[in-house]
Amino acid sequence: MATAALTTPPTEGMVWIDHPAGGYFMDETEVTTADFAAFVTATGYTTEADSFGWSGVFNLETLSWEPVTGANWKFPQGPDAPAARPDEPVTQVSLRDARAYATWAGKRLPTEEEWMYAATQGEENRSFPWGAEMLPDGEYRGNWWQGPFPYENRVEDGYVGVAAVKQFPASDNGLYDIAGNVWEWTDSERKETGESIIKGGSFLCSTSYCTGFNLQQRQFTPADSGLNHLGFRCVAG
Image 1: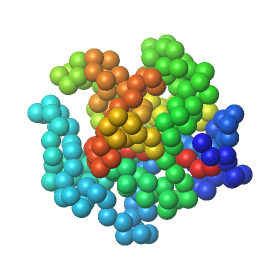
Image 2: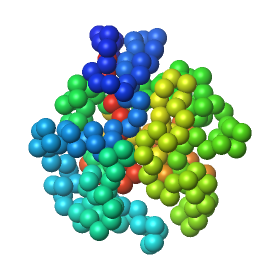
Image 3: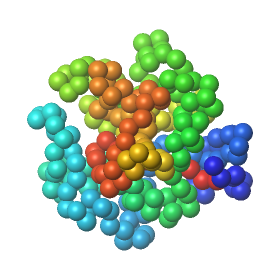
Image 4: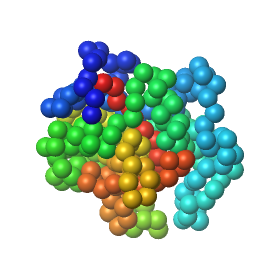
C-alpha cells in the first residue's frame, strides 16, 4: 500500500480511509456512466468490449450468460435494450478499461486489502459494511437478488437490475453501494490462475448462489471480462 502524499482528493466525491499503514482516498460511489463518458469524450478511448464487438450479458429470460453483439458500457444489455443511465455504475468495462480511466482521473484501482479495509469500516464489520446482520431491522441496505437464483427474484430491495448510485444509505465512512449493486474490480489477482479478484457482489447475487455482498466472499474473473454486473471504484494516495 502506498503512503498517501495527497492532502486533498484529485476529484470531488471521495472519502478519506484512515489506514494505519497509510491512508488513502476512495470514491464514495462506483464510477458512473456519466463519469466514464467524460473520460471517453476527453480521450477517445475504445473499450475492450467495443474492440471485441460483443460482451457478456445475463439473460433473465433464458437464465444464462450470453455473448451479446454490441453490448458495451453505453448499452450494457445490448443495443436492443435501454441505454445505461448517467447515474448508474458503469459496467461492461475490463480491468484494462478501469485502469485507463483511473490513470486519466489521477487515481488507481484499490488492492483487495485496501478495498476490504474500507468496506469493513476498518475491519470492524467483517460481514457487511453496516454490521453483522444482513438485514438490520429487516431493512435492505444494498441491491442484490432475493429468492432462489436465477429462478425467482422477489425484488424486495426495489431493483430488478442495477440501481443508480446512492439509492441505499452510506456506510459509516461515507461509502455507498460497497456491498451489492455491481461487482468491483480490484488491482489484485489470484496467483494460482492469474485471474483478477473482484469484490462486493451484485444485483445477481443471492443467498442461494454466490452471496457476494458478504464482504468475506471474493470472485475471480479474467482481466478482459466485460459483464453487465461488473464495475469499479478508484482510490488515490
